[in-house]
Length: 394
Image (cartoon, rainbow, N blue to C red; front, side, top):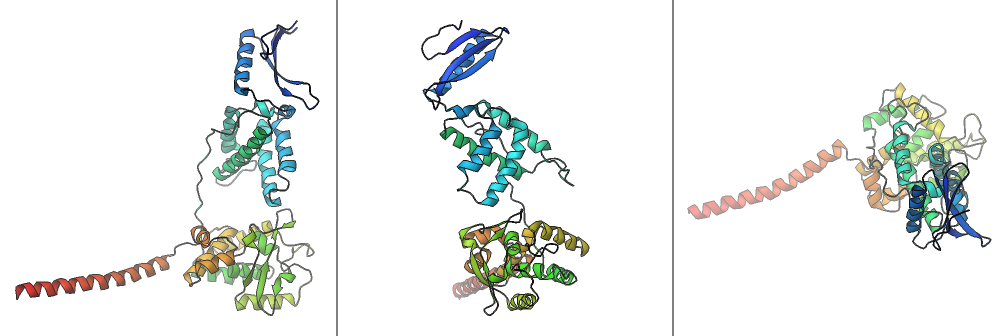
């Protein structure tokens, strides 16, 4: 028979298997009945200690019955139900990927049983060997940025679990994660741009795609999602209003400012006018194998890598073409506000901080300007000193 304890302290009994079981009321079910949490151990003293510790952590709060859900079940529910209308589809796809990294490690544990130590152990394991496919340079290690992304998503999901009275403390709080390290972007120099253009001229399928990218700096998903209805041939303008996801579906651009109309350089506008004459589908750049669909970003990325390797150029990322465009635009005299509009950013300062690279030519120009300015100042000072000295000697 369960031993009676003081009101609110729960019950304690010895099971037939020899273990001690403690039961503590931690909340109320939807039907009004008490919600219990059980504690099992061979030691009666250990069970009592754990019950008292848990009761102290409750501090009068009550849990809902969902606390018994596994972490894997909760993350799926949180993403599909609670976050359904608050995040973009591309973000949701990213979260699904992060959840799949978490499930093999902690997906089976009850949400309320996951500890900070459990989460830290998972982060360490993911960093060490979380990558399924072997990477040429990182092996099976996950990148620091990926571990950080997984942490931020889990932290957000567990904060929500606290608000839903499923847990008392966020186990992702207090963990140690890799520091944020911004990857230095690479740009193509003017000479390398010329080499790249000569190379893509030999590629009938991809030439127009990469030429337009160099001329506009569009995001990968934005250029892939372009339709002929977005192109104003007479005005030479291009409307950017959607992005293509990795699964081939389209959605809104990355930000509200991403929806924009940009004036094309005449060479790019003329290229599109000619291309439109032989267009077979609604897409400006259709999938080479399935023209009724848009070309995927993964295909563009793979083709870029082959072109770069073939002509001996640096192994840059697709996004570095956007970075190259921004840097060359600044070097060519485009003001930050105009550049911000071209890139689809909210603030001009973000465009400058994120996408422009100080080239050697720009540094030399700045040094020459400052040198000339200072020479004039110092020259005037020297002249003044000489006149003062002459006056004193006289």
